[in-house]
Length: 93
Image (tube, rainbow, N blue to C red):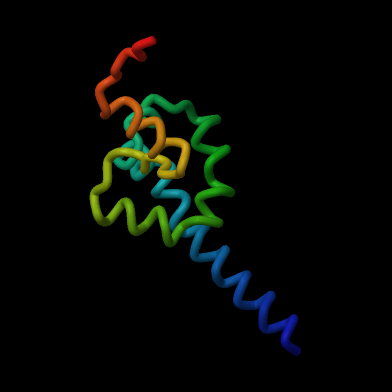
């Protein structure tokens, strides 16, 4: 019973994703990622399964008008940014 309800909800989620994925692959992807604007039809077909899975996130980015992909933020990037921001002092012997 629980498994059947889960599968029905998953089917509804993926159906909504498919309804979203077609116009997103045709129009929306070029609006949120400038590198994808030159994508071929093969590229657009390949992104449909991922778009179906992540459609709420992509819908949010599309409606907010975000035009650049998010930049990764982790400890390594923060440490590298801190190294480049601080002046380099030569070591004296």
